[in-house]
Amino acid sequence: MVYQSRGSAASSERVVEPYGVLIGIRRYLVAKPTTDPAGTLRHYVAEKIESAELTGEVFERDPGFDIHAHAKKAFGAFQNDSEFGEVVWRFKPDAAPHARSFLFHPDQVLEDQPDGSLIVRFSASGHLEMCWHLYMWGDKVEVIGPQALRQMAQEYRRSDFPSFP
Image 1 (cartoon, helix red, strand yellow):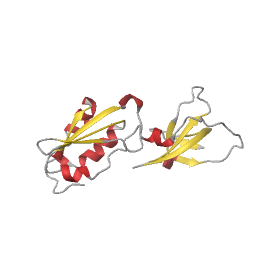
Image 2 (cartoon, one colour; image 1 turned 120 degrees about the vertical axis):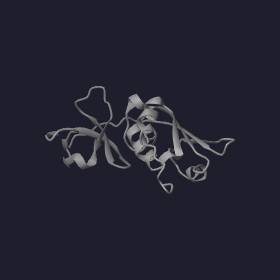
Image 3 (cartoon, one colour; image 1 turned 135 degrees about the horizontal axis):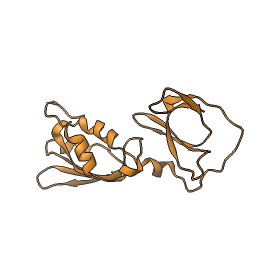
Image 4 (spheres, helix red, strand yellow; image 1 turned 60 degrees about the horizontal axis):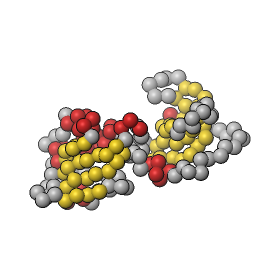
């Protein structure tokens, strides 16, 4: 495929072994570059693939790969292994009923609190995508953890949103 790398105006040719497609805010081709001896999966933004063609070569897909398990590592579609870990959000009592109806992550755990608030827990990466989503909730949600996400989202909590997403 001919692919335009992030932050570069130049495109380059790459030969990859496709494993699947993730669809979120963006669409990603999940593939292994043939030049990577470790066989690291990478995500290629679909809109940055300028052209693609079959090579006629075959490859053996890792039989242990599960696209659903792979997708669960992220909030949305973007993954960053260095960010992966437990995420904890607390929704205020007035937002809790609405938040309870959301599927934030397939493995989420909801915990009703005595004050009427709602704690949502899951493990994932993708702090930037989480921030984009949290922004819609204004000041009705607080990031309890991880600290890096808490710091990233803190400045963008707003009290002037008249409704929930």
